[in-house]
Image 1 (cartoon, rainbow, N blue to C red):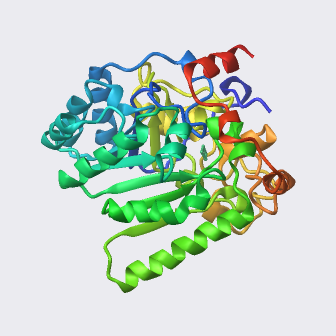
Image 2: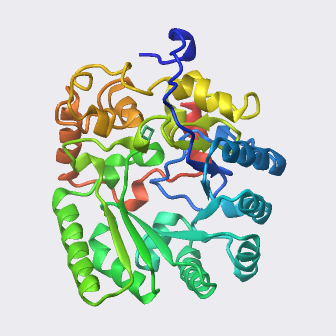
Length: 386
Ligand code: FES
């Protein structure tokens, strides 16, 4: 199915639709790291344009006027933008709660001071692994691990809550005990142990990333053991464990429903209902051409999967459809070629066998880390040409 704007009649607007609450500003696709599970589009090298400082501030202002309250700065690596402090200051001046989602590469004490002065509320630093060898191999940088350690300590010393994120997969999930110990040694307040989800580069490398069921169960058991001990000790650290969709029988209510509360703006100003929607064969509007109010309430792209008129069976008659909204549209598209299908994670989906096949595949030997396709300009250009 080709879900282009021209192939469908414009959907009626949804008068019950409330405002966007969360704005994710993907400031850039540039990044010094090369993680093979990056959720950025495979063809990111084709999207070099970035909104100017003034255009971003205008986007923040429009979204705030609509009702958005939380603003995340991400990328790529948002620290490559020299105007980041200026953007934070502008967003805080509008009353946003601001969150920087970073690898820590490009951070230093003077930028931390600058962000504090600009009013930044929250910084989340991501790690690839608990030791420098695996971390640096996955990141594609020999300096990454030491830099991350230093910056995690500096962020904590600056008074921010320490929020660490580890994307786990078959090459690092067995380190879970060491990962948690590292987080405790760094005095983390929140730790997100997020098993890789398969979009963008992670989808391309899925066979080499999906952990076995035994790996996943071990990691969850270790996390639960630590969680219980931390609670018994009245320890402030909170561990959040995110299981991969591929080991679920019911899909997640992705983005709390399409175009429900989340609004993502890509580096070139394309507005999306989620960070992965760019890969769908739907034309999405640009903030350079339309107002955010029109984009949010009236555009084809944002209205396309709102409500449940678009649903096919088994979603249409499913009693859980208002809980999971049919699952993830991007995952449905990646696994079936039709974004209007039920998310194949659901055991009721006629395509659930694809999830079962991926689980079976995970039990087989898979490529080593070095054989994964790393997210970099060269590989992106090769993918674009193919
Ligand atoms: Fe796009 Fe789930 S990631 S709808």
